[in-house]
Length: 295
Length: 236
Image (tube, rainbow over all chains, first blue to last red; front, side):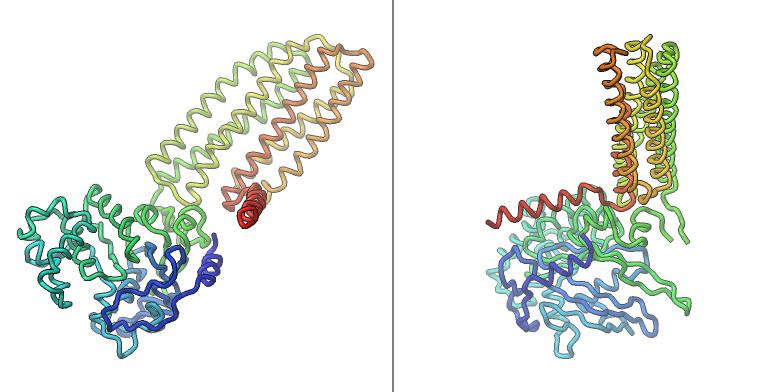
């Protein structure tokens, strides 16, 4: 299937145009039935600058609801930079600036009145290295809901639900009060996923969530991602192309272009269904990269 | 500025390509050799050709093992995946063409001593020419990844199909004129069919070469029509 056809099919699906108050605490708008492909993010002409340096150029793509979208490409291609555009994490980087539009359920995420903290509650993130807080397993997960004003009586339920959802409950249910640091790397990463989903986000962003894990722990996280997409929309950056092939519905391939000033700018080369990218990519650069004939 | 990061893997794929081209070359040589043996009634050469098929079997098994190993160990994608899938399909097609050469060789002893009419002999030689041409063109298309060349193989095969029809007419004319027996005519007709089948295998290979290069096979058009009919039936 070509990229044009995908866009065409998506356009036929009624996309929610209702403006959603991102500062509110209402859950994500899921208009229509689940069989329709709703668009969660519409990115158009996105550029990211770090000071004068343009790190990413003119990215246009849509992220569909309840799908796993993988971002792949060589180091420096801007895939992590792009991922951080989805929850305004680039705001935290000195001198970083995002141009173009990133619409979330039809709302421009970069409008002045949007509260980035609320954005990050709705759009959670899991990082490369597991980063539990130096607290108990219980308190790690309770942290977000407490901030959001969850009642104490509701916390036990939230903890259990989140841990079950993150496929960690059976392993830790008897030691919820022990330190999160006592868990293995793979367990810590699932704890971080449980922590991310405890605040009932709409989207989970993952930045190379398995790169510090062994193959078994990686397999568990991959299975978890497949389960999580029934409830969440997932965007994942991965260096592991086989992982992107295994777990994602759509794949975006980014590349690096050396410009006339000798600096490197990332760009989106091809965005298509994952099976298309890994069997018959349209762009020669995608083919060269995924088959290891890289420049 | 292409830099290889999977050099060994791609060298192994190139090796399989060379093996397949070699197997194709053996078929081309086999068609010519078996035709000479057929037209001269040379049973000793026919026996040699039959024995030589073992070599083809060995090469095809070795090439298949290499493909399976690359699939298991290298996780090929995109053009690499299409190449190995094409190689696997092609191995079977080339090996089958080799078997057809052997079948012609086996038929030689069955029609030994039969005086063939000049028209029949001429048509056998022209079928040889076309079978050689088709196989060689197809292997060139594969070796050079030439989808354009692969796309015309079907038309070239029509020439062989026409010759095959002419050959059958000639054989049964011979039989009607009592130059050969019915039994001998049937044996010759079967031999003609072997040449014609070699052409069909070349066409199959050419379609896989098109798939390798473009990701499409001609069957996609028919499949699209079937899918449209299915969708229509469901909407009724």
